[in-house]
Image (cartoon, rainbow, N blue to C red):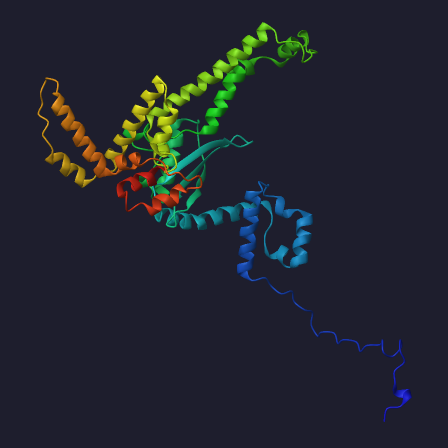
Length: 396
């Protein structure tokens, strides 16, 4: 029978809870799975690389306290000092190197390369080599193949030796597209230039003329003395004097001369005009519409010829050789061919252009769609242009 006296008094007995029994032995911290430890190390290395942080960043006290909130044992089971991060970076690179080699082996295009040199603050020279290609899903991929120290001077021989060694490690010597490491006869035809480097040279020519080093050799005190003697407190309404106009004119001419120097070098390789022609949105019509002066018409003629020669030499077909053999023989003779022979030869060339697909493609004109994806377009039309699509894959 429940009586009133059995009812607990509010605030006294009801608030007195039975004490929890203490564990007989202290609880052990739950260990972190080995897979999570490795994942934490890998993510840490990725964080340092992408954020451009020093190797000592993980040892920051505030970061350690954040990690302890997540898991007290994480900071103790994962080494965070500078040496451990460096060793983990090397280990991860060695592990991922096999994965990258497998991806390069499955590339459906030639492997184009870009590289650059960098000197660290402690005067170590490094060379970074990147590979660019299309994977089996027709997606553009870029991979860092190596960040290798270069011993000795920054000469072409030292750089080429380092790059060649990297090619051998990945087994891609025979699959190189546009790069500096190609056969002697293909060096100019397969070389592309760094646009940023060209702009840098043009800017230096604008600021310092043909001899930029002469300005750098000038003592700072002499430059400051010259500045003090000039009238700096000019207003915007005061026109520039003749000296200023002449200097600006010379700077513009120097800049234009440097840009024109590298622009004329484009004719040494068919890759630039081919990349424009094989873009379905532009085709050869873009060059024909923009190269209209007498000098530019010569560029247009040479560009078409270089693209065709590159296509026929690198992607020959059995059919073209059979057709060529079945055509009229060309006996060696000293006299000029007659008008009829010239017409026959032009007709033969027209038949070859129809057979290889390049002539047919150029005559169809550009595809009038602003949002066209050239990669998807060539993927959809590779059966229509089998040889030409292979040529496109080599320069994509």
